[in-house]
Length: 330
Image (cartoon, rainbow, N blue to C red):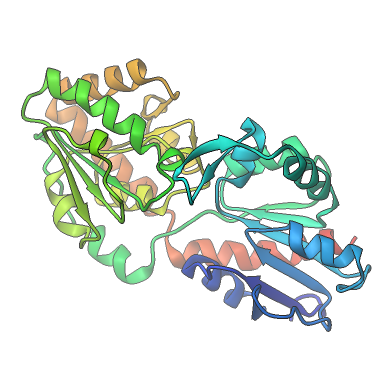
């Protein structure tokens, strides 16, 4: 119960981060797949917004009820560029024109939005200039935080680490990372790229020095890599970036990766455009830099990532949420 309002979190995938946020402010929970109950003042919907807004239009949700969406995926980025990832075909396709028109029209009717990064917030403002907006960045869970923060990486090698799950390789920037690494391998023959997460490995991705490791314990890889890279295209945040930084591994990200707001605190050169030549040059420059320089970056990464701990982020969310609810109500 917040500000005497009954609020329910309508979940789809039930991301553990979202569970923590919603439980911290006392929201009820109901799955999107079931009939949405009518006896709430506000509905916070995970990911989608089209279904609940259409339900309100036809009276299945009362007109005076408030609808908020929590966005932590690349849907706004895809809506903006007019393309989307087709999960059946596993490739990028043109965004269906009619669906795009509906999405752009309905997004203006949202009563509020919770975004996981400044990047997602800026994309939302392209389509909706007025609705109340709240930013709730990611964090590393307590147990993992304690373990990872104690790690000392090997900064003298040429090993790169990427963590992320498929099949949406475009959002994760995996295709660009692989093409980039092939260039890096020419400059540094001993370089290795470790890719952690669920992937159906394509033939064209296979190359000398690239290791698809599947789902693995992260810690051994944090100890043997000197650089993290995530070239996201619309990646809403990327908790894995906080994890590599917390381990003291300098991490390079694209300007379309939500966690860039954390990375740029360490150094602006660690945020790159989606340009293979520039990415290659930044990685080469890093590998050629002195150990002393890498150690300074490593310490700054640890210090910065420690600010994004579970207790601190949830405390801020709990403090900010009542103000946000009041704005939504108005």
